[in-house]
Image (cartoon, rainbow, N blue to C red; front, top):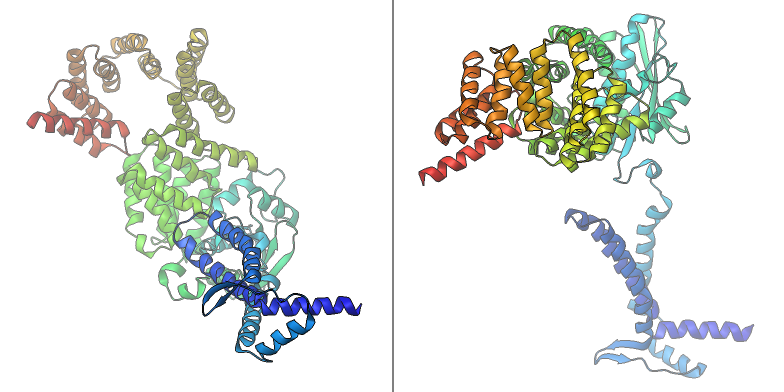
Amino acid sequence: MAKKSGNIYLFWQELRRRKVIKAAAMYAATTFIILEAADIILPRLGLPDWTVTFLIVLLIVGLPITLILSWIFDITPKGVEKTVDLGEDPKTIEASQKNQGIFRLSNLIIAILLVTVCILIYPKIFNKDKFEDIRDEKGKITVAVMPFENLTGDSLNNIWQGGVQNLLISTLSNSEELQVRRYQTMSSILGQKKNVNQASVSPSLAREVARDLETKTYILGKILKAGERIRITAQLLNADTEEIYKTYQVDCHAEADVFAVSDSLGGMIRNYLEIKNYSENLDSPGANASAATDSPEAFGYYIHAYESYEKMDMGTTIELLLEAIEADPEFIDPYVFLSFIYGATLDFVKSEAWCNKAYSKRDQLPVREKLFLDHLYAYFYETPLEEIKYCKLILEMDEMNSVYWLMLGDAFNKLEQYEKAVNSFEKVIKIHEKWGTTIRFPHLFFWMGDALHHLGDHKRENEIYELAFKIIPNNGTVVRYQAKCAISRGEKKVAEEYIDRYRTIRTGEGWNEARILSGIGYTYEQANQIEDAEKFMRHALALDPDSPQILEGLAWVLIDHDINLEEGMKLAERAVKSDPESYNIIDTWGWGLYKSGRYKEALEALNKAWELRGLYDPDIMRHIQLSEKALAESIN
């Protein structure tokens, strides 16, 4: 045993003599400094995440190499020299140790370095981030806020179930560290759960919904009343374990104060979740402003409007939103909502007007609501590139927001980037499949089907139309798109069956024969069967020779496909005289002028069509660009 102890002692003394211990301490301290610096600098240089991992591997590999080299070599005033081997003679080693002295400054430096490294490493190992397990791969904490349960005994206070929920979502969403599911998302998924009373969401159901939404934390709360005092309690829970992280309680004396205490409650939750910019933004009006109203009446109208929208009752939705604005003209959300509703119903004049009214109030909004408004503004006045930018920023905050995946796909469609469009649309479908909810966006099926049609993926295109028909049965547009798909696949008999079905649906909706024939002609034109398209459109014009829309339809086929430019221009001119404010008709006329070589007149007409259009139109933009190029070349 004594022999073994002596060997260990001798080995330790040899390590000291060869300065291996010093090299290890220096290497550990240097490694820590390098990793800390890399953690700060590399992300700001835009380098990928694997760069840090690669650096760690290099440093681990470097440690044994450093120790081996320090054993073999020594740095002396004469340079790097091989360390002299003194053998295993204890007397020789002891004599060498006497030359080193009892105490050296280097020993103190080594000790200080080791203590410093231990102090710095300790919190990283033992003081683990208590929310590490609930952060996503981007480091954000995802949160779902459930409707608050009304226990006041007064049904008039039911409005605060969604009211407090919405206000908390608004407050929490202003954080860069949180990713909060939207109120509309929560309402949609809860509304389609079977046997669910949103006035009382059980903890187990809340946990189920939170996990469906891919959130790892959720908030449950209650509203109580004693006399004139209203108390709001909230619990922050782990969606995997149902562990309660913290319980909150705030009181107020009147219903009008519910907004203030809800904002205060949201601030406490944000603070608890260690929001890094909370203190910096505390005195910033832009960061702390709320998109919500101070008027209980206005907020009630807004909540009920969204409930009507979920039932696809657009008329009632519009009425309630107008009531909300009348109750509080400074309440922004109804303005934005109205713009989208009118856009969905193709009333672009009113949609644009409400967009402008909302945008005039942009400066008073917090960051999140500004992004929604910026996207809406880009939808009307800018290019799809700006739409894509704002959609991506919104989706960074909430990747489960199916509305903005839909809008992102639409923007890619406008740029004719059909693969990217399809990927975005597929995301909408997957989100709703995960939730088990119904897709309430009819445009999804038309936009996605059109993108797939351009890609030639007719199998998936037809699957999308079949899915659409399950959700919106007996829809004439869906059937017409199915006919287009069948025609493109060369399935003539199947296409004729769809066309007969289309005719039946439109007849039941009160369409006359000329309008139906024009729709069939347009279907053949989209499927690139131009001869059949011309036949149906001529038949339609014979039945209704004064319809500007039917005139334009035939004119477009004759002009765009170079069948009869002269006849097409005559039809287009008649259509313009009949309806001088239709941007589609003016675009067709301008395109005919371009084909006729009248570039200056074409550009004037096409610019007018652009001014009259409701939204960004890629066809008109392409026609303008071609006319500008042709005019410039003709001048030169």
